[in-house]
Length: 80
Picture (cartoon, rainbow, N blue to C red):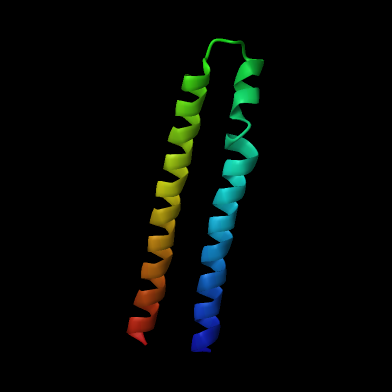
């Protein structure tokens, strides 16, 4: 039972990591194409800055979510 809980936590963490990576690849990487649809107002450096900001935000949110998941698991294990 204890091993199964740990395995589920690890699988959940990997699912979160893969979901964040998929979001970055599917939505953030082609952001240049989406922004050009609204007009050629932004240069390449602005688009790169927006992509970098979104990627940094996603990584920070992912780190916080993984830390929260770890804390929940440890609190559950320490109470038993």
